Structures are given as C-alpha cells and as structure tokens.
Image (cartoon, rainbow, N blue to C red):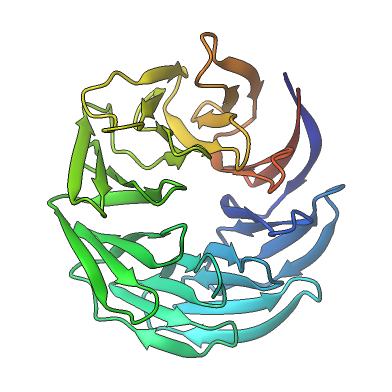
Amino acid sequence: MQLTKHWAATLEDYVIDLAWSPDGAQLAAAAGSGPVSLFAAAGGACRHQLPGHDNGTNCLAWQPGAAVLATGGQDGAVKFWDPAAGQHTATATLGPAWVEHLGWRPGADSSLLFAAAGKNLTALRPDGSVVHAFPPAPKTISALAWQPAGGCAAVAYFGGVCLWDADDFIAQKEFTYANGIHALVWSPDNRWLVSGNQDPSVHLWIPAEDIELQMSGYEGKVKELAFDRTSRWLATGGGRDCCVWDCAGAGPEGREPAMLPHEAKVCAVAFQHTHGLLATAAQDGTVQLWSPERAQPLRATVKMPAAATKLAWSPDDALLAIGSAKGAVYVLKCDA
C-alpha cells in the first residue's frame, strides 16, 4: 500500500481545523489567524478564501447533505457561508466567549447546529436564528459530539457529560466524571460514548444500559479518539503508541489493546468512513496507515516536515487530508 502526494497548499498560519464537504468535492481548511480556504479536491485549486473571524477561527463544520459551511471564532460568533459562491450568508453572535465547538445534527433534521462558547450551548439554524439557548454548563464546555442517530448530543465540561435531547432540548442523562475531559466520540452504532481525559485515562459509557468502564495508565492526557466503521475498534492517543481497543461484547476493560508504535507522541488519529484503515500521526511529522486487525498491521509510512494538527479522510476514503502546525495542507492518495 502507498500514500502518494495528490496536492499540497499553504495557509498563513497553523491549520486549526480541516473538513471535507459532504460530496467530497471541496476541502475547507481554517488557519488559526482567521481565514478559511476552500480547495478543490481534484487538483487543490483554491476556489475561495473566506475571511473567517477577527482574531482567529477555531472550528468549522459542513452541514450534512447541504451546501452550507459554519465556522466558529474568537469573536464569539458563528458564521454561515455559501461555499459555492464564497459568500457570507449569516452570523449568530453568541457573546464574548470563543466559539470552540460546532456540530450539525446527523439524520433527518440536519439543519440544526449546536455551537459551544464558554459555558453556553446554543442551537442554531443556517440563517443564524437561535432555536434554543441551553442553561449554562457548570464549567467551560470542552467537547461536543452528536450521537450518530441524531437523537441527542453529548456535551462535556470539567466534572461530567450531559446528553441533551435534540427535539425538546431537555437533559436525557448526566454522567459525573471528576476530572477534565478533552475529547468525546460516539461509536457509529450509538452504543458507546467515550471520553479522552486529563487524568490521563479513557472513560466509556453505554448510555442505554447505564454501564461505565475505564482504561487508565496512559503516558499523558488523551485528546485523540476514533472509532472504526464497525464500532468494534477504538483508537486512542495519549502517548507514543496508538492503543486500539476491542469494544466487542462487554467492552475493552481488562483486555490488552493492540499497540501501534510511533517514536514521538501521537497527535491525531482517524479511521476511514467505510473501510478499515486507521491513520495515525505523531509530533515528529510521521503519518502511518494501519490495518489493526492484521498480524502485521503497518501498511504505509510517510514523513511530513511538521506535526499534523488534523487528519481527515475524504467521504469516499480515497484521499487523506493532513493539516500541519506550520500551515501546510497535504492531500495524499491512498493506493492499495
């Protein structure tokens, strides 16, 4: 298997976020300083450069199945864009706190966007209108993850996680966790909700069954989480090895993970959407592809000039986009 360079581009600052359009035709890349570039997937031509946010852009999110891009910034605003025209279409001003997390509802009503700024969670429409303002969280919201079925969104803060219902906006469940939470991910089958934590550990809940599990012993705080398409394999960072846990049956607690080694700390992990490859990146610029279920899992290795800040597979899994700490965007083709 080979990873070959498809195209590359350079932003004016480090790549803070990176996301493919739902149809795979465009790649949006946000520079930490503010501008958002829209690149053609086919050849890397810059179709539009959006001004983004004053003082800096933090996050971006494409509306599923629609031509709307949302961005959140240090100006406390969510902005909506028409990517085809390169035009700003609406703004929702949420207050003085930075907008750090955005998530569109999956499924039938994909026009609902949750935005987190400081302790506040707000439900928005693409025209910038506020559908609902939630009660403030006890602490600053540190992670946001929609259940794949779209019924609720998990919102994390220091001290716990709350599941907010997407239809009536009430709290379905609250889970106490007496530490900082850096990342959240759901399994594609909606069974597992997983947090990567400051303490350092990985915590798992089965919300439907009120079951909790925990894996600790990591070298450092865990910010990198990814499930594979089958919901069986959970990849986690937190050290120089990517740990891949088997979540089949009763789950991974007490099982030994597969250890996928790097020579530096892992800084990003991403499974393909419909195939089985796992991409991992480390602080030394190394990016590796793995088939975790194989006896010899390593499939390909490339060395980048700087550490990756983000990994993103295209919707058809043919291309791997890599954002770097030095502002470079690389798009690699995955050849079997």
